[in-house]
Image (cartoon, rainbow, N blue to C red; front, side):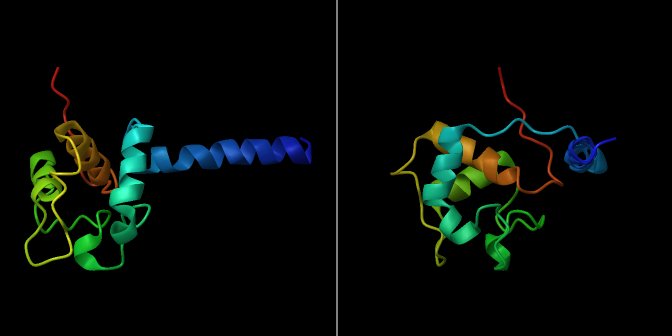
Length: 119
């Protein structure tokens, strides 16, 4: 096997490892609009992958101070949290945008099941 073929093979194998290791099917990617909203409204405090080193700001560690259910996360985004830096976004975002952001930030915590979409 040539060096290039070996490298291509290894890249393919390594790309498959995270999905197989977790035993979970990969989640569909968030829409570009949702990712852009996260970047503009949330990323400064919560970081690009939701893994802020500041405990209440971390979405990836499985510790949800204000609840991890989709409705609870949406409520936190909508109303903010009194006495903290988490401001309410109800005047800046639509309900569908808030719902999409709630689903997106939940996706950083690999221990959570994805939100069920109603038809």
